[in-house]
Image (cartoon, rainbow, N blue to C red):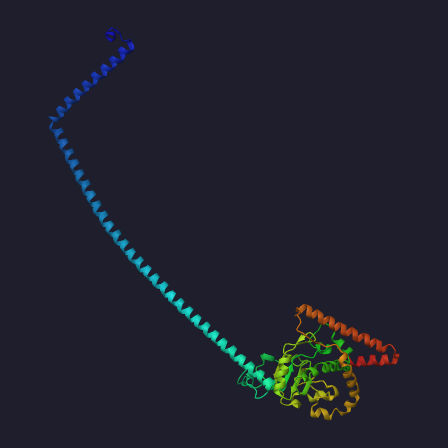
Length: 425
Protein backbone atom coordinates (compact mmCIF):
# COMPACT_ATOMS: atom_id res chain seq x y z
CA UNK A 1 0.00 0.00 0.00
CA UNK A 2 2.87 2.18 0.67
CA UNK A 3 4.42 1.37 -2.79
CA UNK A 4 1.17 1.98 -4.70
CA UNK A 5 0.60 5.26 -3.03
CA UNK A 6 4.17 6.33 -3.74
CA UNK A 7 4.45 8.48 -6.84
CA UNK A 8 7.67 7.93 -8.87
CA UNK A 9 9.79 10.85 -9.72
CA UNK A 10 10.28 12.07 -13.23
CA UNK A 11 13.75 10.56 -13.43
CA UNK A 12 12.54 7.17 -12.38
CA UNK A 13 9.56 7.36 -14.74
CA UNK A 14 11.89 8.31 -17.62
CA UNK A 15 14.28 5.36 -16.84
CA UNK A 16 11.31 2.92 -16.81
CA UNK A 17 9.95 4.35 -20.04
CA UNK A 18 13.34 3.91 -21.81
CA UNK A 19 13.61 0.37 -20.55
CA UNK A 20 10.11 -0.49 -21.80
CA UNK A 21 10.87 1.09 -25.15
CA UNK A 22 14.13 -0.93 -25.56
CA UNK A 23 12.25 -4.11 -24.69
CA UNK A 24 9.60 -3.36 -27.25
CA UNK A 25 12.24 -2.69 -29.90
CA UNK A 26 14.00 -6.00 -29.13
CA UNK A 27 10.76 -7.89 -29.34
CA UNK A 28 9.89 -6.32 -32.65
CA UNK A 29 13.36 -7.11 -34.02
CA UNK A 30 13.07 -10.70 -32.84
CA UNK A 31 9.73 -11.09 -34.50
CA UNK A 32 11.14 -9.57 -37.69
CA UNK A 33 14.14 -11.97 -37.58
CA UNK A 34 11.85 -14.96 -37.10
CA UNK A 35 9.73 -13.83 -39.99
CA UNK A 36 12.77 -13.49 -42.26
CA UNK A 37 14.12 -16.88 -41.19
CA UNK A 38 10.86 -18.51 -42.05
CA UNK A 39 10.94 -16.80 -45.41
CA UNK A 40 14.54 -17.99 -45.98
CA UNK A 41 13.64 -21.52 -44.97
CA UNK A 42 10.94 -21.56 -47.49
CA UNK A 43 13.32 -20.10 -50.12
CA UNK A 44 15.09 -22.71 -52.42
CA UNK A 45 18.23 -20.56 -52.80
CA UNK A 46 18.67 -20.40 -49.05
CA UNK A 47 18.25 -24.13 -48.68
CA UNK A 48 20.85 -24.64 -51.45
CA UNK A 49 23.25 -22.32 -49.66
CA UNK A 50 22.76 -24.22 -46.41
CA UNK A 51 23.46 -27.48 -48.24
CA UNK A 52 26.65 -26.04 -49.72
CA UNK A 53 27.76 -24.84 -46.30
CA UNK A 54 27.06 -28.31 -44.85
CA UNK A 55 28.98 -30.03 -47.61
CA UNK A 56 31.84 -27.56 -47.26
CA UNK A 57 31.93 -28.15 -43.54
CA UNK A 58 32.00 -31.93 -44.05
CA UNK A 59 34.80 -31.55 -46.60
CA UNK A 60 36.79 -29.43 -44.18
CA UNK A 61 36.28 -32.01 -41.45
CA UNK A 62 37.42 -34.82 -43.77
CA UNK A 63 40.45 -32.82 -44.89
CA UNK A 64 41.42 -32.02 -41.32
CA UNK A 65 40.99 -35.69 -40.37
CA UNK A 66 43.15 -36.72 -43.33
CA UNK A 67 45.82 -34.17 -42.42
CA UNK A 68 45.77 -35.41 -38.84
CA UNK A 69 46.21 -38.95 -40.11
CA UNK A 70 49.09 -37.92 -42.37
CA UNK A 71 50.73 -35.99 -39.56
CA UNK A 72 50.32 -38.98 -37.27
CA UNK A 73 51.80 -41.33 -39.85
CA UNK A 74 54.69 -38.93 -40.45
CA UNK A 75 55.24 -38.68 -36.70
CA UNK A 76 55.28 -42.45 -36.48
CA UNK A 77 57.81 -42.61 -39.31
CA UNK A 78 59.94 -39.87 -37.76
CA UNK A 79 59.72 -41.58 -34.40
CA UNK A 80 60.73 -44.84 -35.98
CA UNK A 81 63.67 -43.13 -37.72
CA UNK A 82 64.66 -41.35 -34.52
CA UNK A 83 64.46 -44.62 -32.64
CA UNK A 84 66.61 -46.20 -35.30
CA UNK A 85 69.15 -43.39 -35.06
CA UNK A 86 69.14 -43.61 -31.28
CA UNK A 87 69.68 -47.35 -31.44
CA UNK A 88 72.57 -46.78 -33.88
CA UNK A 89 74.06 -44.14 -31.62
CA UNK A 90 73.74 -46.48 -28.67
CA UNK A 91 75.40 -49.25 -30.67
CA UNK A 92 78.25 -46.95 -31.72
CA UNK A 93 78.56 -45.67 -28.16
CA UNK A 94 78.72 -49.23 -26.90
CA UNK A 95 81.36 -50.03 -29.51
CA UNK A 96 83.32 -46.90 -28.54
CA UNK A 97 83.04 -47.82 -24.87
CA UNK A 98 84.19 -51.33 -25.64
CA UNK A 99 87.05 -49.98 -27.75
CA UNK A 100 87.98 -47.52 -25.01
CA UNK A 101 87.92 -50.26 -22.41
CA UNK A 102 89.97 -52.43 -24.73
CA UNK A 103 92.47 -49.58 -25.27
CA UNK A 104 92.61 -48.93 -21.52
CA UNK A 105 93.19 -52.61 -20.93
CA UNK A 106 95.89 -52.63 -23.60
CA UNK A 107 97.54 -49.57 -22.06
CA UNK A 108 97.28 -51.14 -18.62
CA UNK A 109 98.80 -54.36 -19.91
CA UNK A 110 101.60 -52.44 -21.66
CA UNK A 111 102.20 -50.41 -18.51
CA UNK A 112 102.32 -53.56 -16.42
CA UNK A 113 104.71 -55.14 -18.93
CA UNK A 114 106.84 -51.97 -18.92
CA UNK A 115 106.79 -51.87 -15.13
CA UNK A 116 107.74 -55.51 -15.08
CA UNK A 117 110.62 -54.80 -17.46
CA UNK A 118 111.69 -51.85 -15.32
CA UNK A 119 111.55 -54.00 -12.19
CA UNK A 120 113.45 -56.78 -13.93
CA UNK A 121 116.01 -54.29 -15.25
CA UNK A 122 116.29 -52.68 -11.82
CA UNK A 123 116.72 -56.09 -10.22
CA UNK A 124 119.24 -57.01 -12.90
CA UNK A 125 121.14 -53.75 -12.35
CA UNK A 126 121.05 -54.25 -8.61
CA UNK A 127 122.28 -57.78 -9.12
CA UNK A 128 125.03 -56.55 -11.44
CA UNK A 129 125.84 -53.79 -8.95
CA UNK A 130 126.07 -56.31 -6.15
CA UNK A 131 128.19 -58.58 -8.32
CA UNK A 132 130.36 -55.60 -9.31
CA UNK A 133 130.65 -54.55 -5.66
CA UNK A 134 131.49 -58.10 -4.68
CA UNK A 135 133.98 -58.38 -7.53
CA UNK A 136 135.49 -55.00 -6.58
CA UNK A 137 135.74 -56.07 -2.96
CA UNK A 138 137.37 -59.32 -4.03
CA UNK A 139 139.73 -57.35 -6.28
CA UNK A 140 140.58 -54.93 -3.46
CA UNK A 141 141.09 -57.89 -1.16
CA UNK A 142 143.44 -59.49 -3.68
CA UNK A 143 145.24 -56.15 -4.13
CA UNK A 144 145.53 -55.73 -0.36
CA UNK A 145 146.75 -59.30 -0.08
CA UNK A 146 149.25 -58.56 -2.85
CA UNK A 147 150.41 -55.42 -1.06
CA UNK A 148 150.67 -57.07 2.36
CA UNK A 149 151.86 -60.57 1.50
CA UNK A 150 153.29 -60.13 -1.99
CA UNK A 151 152.96 -62.91 -4.52
CA UNK A 152 151.62 -62.74 -8.06
CA UNK A 153 150.10 -59.54 -9.43
CA UNK A 154 146.26 -59.74 -9.49
CA UNK A 155 144.96 -60.41 -12.98
CA UNK A 156 142.73 -57.29 -12.76
CA UNK A 157 145.85 -55.11 -12.61
CA UNK A 158 147.56 -56.83 -15.52
CA UNK A 159 145.09 -55.51 -18.11
CA UNK A 160 145.83 -52.48 -20.29
CA UNK A 161 143.33 -49.73 -21.19
CA UNK A 162 143.70 -48.42 -24.74
CA UNK A 163 142.32 -45.14 -26.09
CA UNK A 164 142.22 -46.26 -29.75
CA UNK A 165 142.53 -50.05 -29.93
CA UNK A 166 143.96 -51.32 -33.18
CA UNK A 167 145.58 -48.02 -34.16
CA UNK A 168 149.25 -47.18 -34.22
CA UNK A 169 150.81 -46.71 -30.78
CA UNK A 170 151.82 -43.13 -29.91
CA UNK A 171 155.61 -43.18 -29.80
CA UNK A 172 155.97 -40.30 -27.31
CA UNK A 173 153.42 -41.78 -24.91
CA UNK A 174 155.16 -45.13 -25.28
CA UNK A 175 158.52 -43.59 -24.34
CA UNK A 176 157.72 -40.96 -21.70
CA UNK A 177 154.16 -41.83 -20.59
CA UNK A 178 152.74 -38.44 -21.69
CA UNK A 179 151.60 -36.86 -24.94
CA UNK A 180 151.09 -33.21 -25.82
CA UNK A 181 147.71 -33.99 -27.42
CA UNK A 182 146.39 -35.90 -24.40
CA UNK A 183 143.11 -37.73 -24.93
CA UNK A 184 142.67 -36.01 -28.33
CA UNK A 185 145.67 -37.80 -29.82
CA UNK A 186 144.72 -39.81 -32.92
CA UNK A 187 147.13 -42.59 -31.97
CA UNK A 188 146.73 -45.27 -29.36
CA UNK A 189 147.67 -44.61 -25.73
CA UNK A 190 148.09 -47.69 -23.55
CA UNK A 191 147.35 -46.95 -19.88
CA UNK A 192 148.66 -49.47 -17.35
CA UNK A 193 146.89 -50.43 -14.15
CA UNK A 194 150.12 -51.34 -12.42
CA UNK A 195 153.78 -50.70 -13.07
CA UNK A 196 156.97 -50.13 -11.14
CA UNK A 197 157.05 -46.46 -12.25
CA UNK A 198 154.81 -43.63 -10.99
CA UNK A 199 154.29 -40.31 -12.75
CA UNK A 200 152.99 -37.32 -10.78
CA UNK A 201 151.84 -34.73 -13.31
CA UNK A 202 152.86 -31.08 -12.74
CA UNK A 203 154.15 -31.94 -9.26
CA UNK A 204 157.12 -29.58 -9.27
CA UNK A 205 156.43 -25.90 -9.90
CA UNK A 206 158.66 -22.86 -10.06
CA UNK A 207 158.16 -19.25 -11.00
CA UNK A 208 160.23 -19.52 -14.18
CA UNK A 209 158.29 -22.60 -15.33
CA UNK A 210 154.98 -20.90 -14.61
CA UNK A 211 155.98 -17.99 -16.86
CA UNK A 212 155.45 -20.29 -19.84
CA UNK A 213 151.72 -20.42 -19.17
CA UNK A 214 151.04 -16.96 -17.75
CA UNK A 215 151.21 -13.51 -19.26
CA UNK A 216 150.23 -11.49 -16.17
CA UNK A 217 153.86 -10.34 -15.68
CA UNK A 218 156.32 -9.04 -18.18
CA UNK A 219 158.04 -11.99 -19.88
CA UNK A 220 161.41 -10.34 -19.21
CA UNK A 221 160.96 -10.84 -15.49
CA UNK A 222 162.26 -14.39 -15.89
CA UNK A 223 165.63 -12.94 -16.86
CA UNK A 224 166.02 -11.67 -13.29
CA UNK A 225 166.33 -15.28 -12.12
CA UNK A 226 169.50 -17.25 -12.59
CA UNK A 227 169.71 -20.99 -13.12
CA UNK A 228 171.29 -21.36 -9.69
CA UNK A 229 168.17 -19.90 -8.04
CA UNK A 230 165.92 -22.36 -9.80
CA UNK A 231 168.26 -25.27 -9.06
CA UNK A 232 168.42 -24.30 -5.39
CA UNK A 233 164.64 -24.33 -5.29
CA UNK A 234 164.67 -27.73 -7.04
CA UNK A 235 167.09 -29.19 -4.48
CA UNK A 236 164.84 -28.03 -1.69
CA UNK A 237 161.89 -29.70 -3.38
CA UNK A 238 163.89 -32.88 -4.07
CA UNK A 239 165.09 -33.31 -0.49
CA UNK A 240 161.60 -32.54 0.75
CA UNK A 241 159.74 -35.02 -1.44
CA UNK A 242 161.96 -37.99 -2.29
CA UNK A 243 162.36 -39.23 1.32
CA UNK A 244 158.59 -39.58 1.46
CA UNK A 245 158.62 -41.83 -1.60
CA UNK A 246 161.52 -43.86 -0.23
CA UNK A 247 159.43 -44.77 2.80
CA UNK A 248 157.29 -47.04 0.63
CA UNK A 249 160.02 -49.11 -0.96
CA UNK A 250 163.32 -49.32 -2.79
CA UNK A 251 163.49 -46.42 -5.29
CA UNK A 252 165.68 -47.11 -8.32
CA UNK A 253 165.12 -43.97 -10.39
CA UNK A 254 163.90 -40.41 -9.83
CA UNK A 255 163.56 -37.87 -12.62
CA UNK A 256 162.00 -34.43 -12.30
CA UNK A 257 161.18 -32.50 -15.47
CA UNK A 258 161.86 -28.86 -16.18
CA UNK A 259 160.13 -28.91 -19.58
CA UNK A 260 158.06 -25.95 -20.70
CA UNK A 261 155.38 -28.01 -22.47
CA UNK A 262 152.22 -28.35 -20.33
CA UNK A 263 152.09 -32.16 -20.53
CA UNK A 264 155.66 -32.49 -19.18
CA UNK A 265 156.06 -29.36 -17.06
CA UNK A 266 157.04 -30.32 -13.51
CA UNK A 267 156.34 -34.05 -13.98
CA UNK A 268 158.00 -36.29 -11.39
CA UNK A 269 158.90 -39.89 -12.28
CA UNK A 270 159.52 -42.37 -9.44
CA UNK A 271 160.67 -45.88 -10.36
CA UNK A 272 160.57 -48.61 -7.73
CA UNK A 273 162.42 -51.88 -7.77
CA UNK A 274 159.19 -53.82 -7.25
CA UNK A 275 155.67 -53.25 -8.57
CA UNK A 276 154.32 -53.99 -5.11
CA UNK A 277 156.19 -51.01 -3.66
CA UNK A 278 154.87 -48.83 -6.48
CA UNK A 279 151.31 -49.91 -5.68
CA UNK A 280 151.82 -49.12 -1.99
CA UNK A 281 153.17 -45.68 -2.90
CA UNK A 282 150.30 -45.12 -5.34
CA UNK A 283 147.73 -45.79 -2.62
CA UNK A 284 149.67 -43.69 -0.15
CA UNK A 285 150.02 -40.60 -2.35
CA UNK A 286 146.82 -40.64 -4.42
CA UNK A 287 144.67 -37.68 -3.37
CA UNK A 288 147.28 -36.12 -1.08
CA UNK A 289 148.12 -32.43 -1.21
CA UNK A 290 151.48 -30.74 -1.52
CA UNK A 291 152.12 -27.01 -1.71
CA UNK A 292 148.40 -26.25 -2.10
CA UNK A 293 147.95 -28.65 -5.05
CA UNK A 294 146.34 -32.08 -5.10
CA UNK A 295 148.55 -34.80 -6.53
CA UNK A 296 147.52 -36.72 -9.65
CA UNK A 297 149.39 -40.02 -9.87
CA UNK A 298 149.32 -42.65 -12.60
CA UNK A 299 151.27 -45.72 -13.56
CA UNK A 300 153.59 -45.47 -16.56
CA UNK A 301 156.15 -47.77 -18.11
CA UNK A 302 159.53 -46.24 -18.94
CA UNK A 303 161.26 -49.00 -20.86
CA UNK A 304 164.48 -47.08 -21.52
CA UNK A 305 165.42 -44.02 -19.48
CA UNK A 306 168.17 -43.24 -21.95
CA UNK A 307 165.57 -43.03 -24.72
CA UNK A 308 163.08 -41.05 -22.62
CA UNK A 309 165.48 -38.40 -21.31
CA UNK A 310 166.79 -35.85 -23.80
CA UNK A 311 170.57 -36.31 -23.89
CA UNK A 312 171.09 -33.12 -25.88
CA UNK A 313 169.51 -31.11 -23.05
CA UNK A 314 172.08 -32.50 -20.61
CA UNK A 315 174.77 -31.15 -22.96
CA UNK A 316 172.76 -27.91 -23.45
CA UNK A 317 172.48 -28.60 -27.17
CA UNK A 318 168.80 -29.53 -27.55
CA UNK A 319 167.66 -28.21 -30.98
CA UNK A 320 163.96 -28.39 -30.00
CA UNK A 321 164.30 -26.06 -27.05
CA UNK A 322 161.07 -25.50 -25.17
CA UNK A 323 159.03 -27.56 -27.66
CA UNK A 324 160.98 -30.79 -27.04
CA UNK A 325 158.74 -33.74 -26.18
CA UNK A 326 161.47 -35.75 -24.47
CA UNK A 327 162.26 -35.33 -20.79
CA UNK A 328 164.36 -32.32 -19.81
CA UNK A 329 165.34 -33.28 -16.27
CA UNK A 330 167.17 -31.64 -13.41
CA UNK A 331 170.42 -33.13 -12.20
CA UNK A 332 169.60 -34.79 -8.89
CA UNK A 333 171.57 -33.75 -5.79
CA UNK A 334 174.80 -35.77 -5.43
CA UNK A 335 174.06 -37.02 -8.94
CA UNK A 336 171.68 -39.56 -7.42
CA UNK A 337 169.86 -41.97 -9.76
CA UNK A 338 171.98 -40.84 -12.71
CA UNK A 339 171.71 -42.53 -16.11
CA UNK A 340 174.87 -44.27 -17.32
CA UNK A 341 175.65 -41.76 -20.05
CA UNK A 342 174.89 -38.97 -17.62
CA UNK A 343 177.31 -40.38 -15.01
CA UNK A 344 180.21 -40.43 -17.44
CA UNK A 345 179.78 -36.74 -18.22
CA UNK A 346 179.09 -35.35 -14.78
CA UNK A 347 182.05 -36.51 -12.69
CA UNK A 348 183.53 -33.01 -12.81
CA UNK A 349 180.45 -31.51 -11.19
CA UNK A 350 180.24 -33.95 -8.27
CA UNK A 351 183.05 -32.48 -6.18
CA UNK A 352 181.92 -28.89 -6.65
CA UNK A 353 178.31 -29.60 -5.67
CA UNK A 354 178.75 -32.20 -2.92
CA UNK A 355 179.59 -29.75 -0.14
CA UNK A 356 176.53 -27.63 -0.88
CA UNK A 357 174.30 -30.73 -0.99
CA UNK A 358 175.64 -32.00 2.33
CA UNK A 359 175.04 -28.64 4.00
CA UNK A 360 171.58 -28.49 2.47
CA UNK A 361 170.69 -31.96 3.79
CA UNK A 362 171.89 -31.02 7.26
CA UNK A 363 169.50 -28.08 7.29
CA UNK A 364 166.63 -29.97 5.62
CA UNK A 365 164.98 -30.73 8.96
CA UNK A 366 164.67 -27.03 9.68
CA UNK A 367 162.64 -26.38 6.53
CA UNK A 368 158.88 -25.99 6.63
CA UNK A 369 157.11 -29.23 5.76
CA UNK A 370 154.84 -28.73 2.76
CA UNK A 371 152.79 -31.91 3.00
CA UNK A 372 149.31 -31.09 4.23
CA UNK A 373 145.84 -32.47 4.59
CA UNK A 374 143.34 -31.91 1.82
CA UNK A 375 142.31 -28.23 2.11
CA UNK A 376 139.16 -26.60 0.88
CA UNK A 377 139.23 -25.84 -2.82
CA UNK A 378 139.58 -22.15 -3.56
CA UNK A 379 137.54 -20.48 -6.30
CA UNK A 380 139.45 -19.81 -9.50
CA UNK A 381 139.52 -16.07 -8.90
CA UNK A 382 140.87 -16.45 -5.35
CA UNK A 383 143.38 -19.03 -6.57
CA UNK A 384 144.64 -16.71 -9.32
CA UNK A 385 144.92 -13.86 -6.80
CA UNK A 386 146.85 -16.15 -4.47
CA UNK A 387 149.21 -17.14 -7.28
CA UNK A 388 149.76 -13.47 -8.11
CA UNK A 389 150.58 -12.73 -4.48
CA UNK A 390 152.98 -15.67 -4.32
CA UNK A 391 154.76 -14.68 -7.51
CA UNK A 392 154.99 -11.09 -6.37
CA UNK A 393 156.41 -12.19 -2.99
CA UNK A 394 158.98 -14.38 -4.74
CA UNK A 395 159.91 -11.52 -7.03
CA UNK A 396 160.23 -9.04 -4.15
CA UNK A 397 162.21 -11.53 -2.07
CA UNK A 398 164.60 -12.10 -4.94
CA UNK A 399 164.96 -8.36 -5.57
CA UNK A 400 165.67 -7.69 -1.89
CA UNK A 401 168.24 -10.47 -1.68
CA UNK A 402 169.89 -9.28 -4.89
CA UNK A 403 170.05 -5.70 -3.63
CA UNK A 404 171.47 -6.84 -0.28
CA UNK A 405 174.11 -8.92 -2.02
CA UNK A 406 175.08 -6.05 -4.34
CA UNK A 407 175.33 -3.43 -1.59
CA UNK A 408 178.82 -4.26 -0.20
CA UNK A 409 180.36 -4.96 -3.59
CA UNK A 410 182.12 -2.47 -5.78
CA UNK A 411 180.60 -0.69 -8.73
CA UNK A 412 182.67 -2.80 -11.12
CA UNK A 413 180.85 -5.94 -10.00
CA UNK A 414 177.55 -4.11 -10.36
CA UNK A 415 178.48 -3.21 -13.92
CA UNK A 416 179.52 -6.79 -14.68
CA UNK A 417 176.21 -8.15 -13.34
CA UNK A 418 174.35 -5.51 -15.32
CA UNK A 419 176.18 -6.53 -18.50
CA UNK A 420 175.44 -10.17 -17.69
CA UNK A 421 171.72 -9.47 -17.40
CA UNK A 422 171.88 -7.45 -20.59
CA UNK A 423 173.46 -10.40 -22.42
CA UNK A 424 170.68 -12.62 -21.11
CA UNK A 425 168.08 -10.24 -22.52
